[in-house]
Image 1 (tube, each protein chain N blue to C red):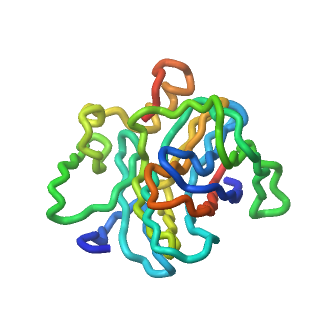
Image 2: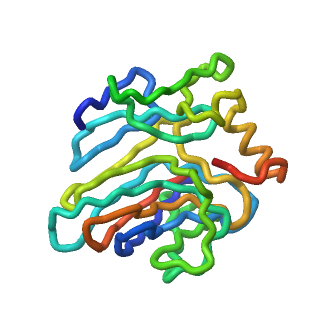
Image 3: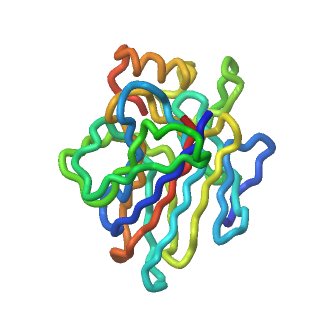
Amino acid sequence: MRRYSADGQAAAGTNLTIAELVANGATTRARIYDIMIGSDATPADVATEFNLIRGTVSGAPTTTVTPRALDPSDPASLMSLEVGTFTGQTKTANSSLMNIALNQRATFRWVAVPDGEIVIPAAADNWVGLESIASGGTPNINVTFHWLE
Amino acid sequence: MIGAQHTRQANGAIIIDGMHVADTLQCVHCGTMWIPVKGSGKKRGFCMKCHGVTCGCKECDTCMPFEKKLDMYEKGKIKILR
């Protein structure tokens, strides 16, 4: 399986999606095995609660990031990372895959063991994203995803 | 992480500021991840067919392996994937 990486950043807030990893088509499933969350803002004691959620319509983002293959000889990824503020997005209700509470000063990393990855189905425009549920401020949140295709 | 357990067969690991602080378990029916905390009061399950833990929500009490759920969702046989 091929490995890819993409990162993006957006401000935290209430029920705001920071970034979503979107299937461009119905060709392949993606398996997220590494998630890193941090903040490049001036250090402050701001607590933010995140959920990793599913969605079925990615909507229009501020920015679309082209993933990078960790092996330069691999072909382009069949996923995209969409970042920023979204319009026309559809989130799947009650689909929280992981709940994370984090202080802005800390860096969070989740790593899957083999076969423990978070799976994005092979369905066009389906996505898994990091959502800020509630925050004590609006710090810039940086997120990096690593996944297998 | 206070109360978090390290488990023998974890599905993931959480690292805060470079230190491994907790393991995560994954539901075999829906893929949800959580940190097991002894004495938390949260009720989880165990599927004897899949031989794995479940998240404890009612939808996951009935056995449907997550891979099968994905296949059915991709074929349009189920509308919502949670």
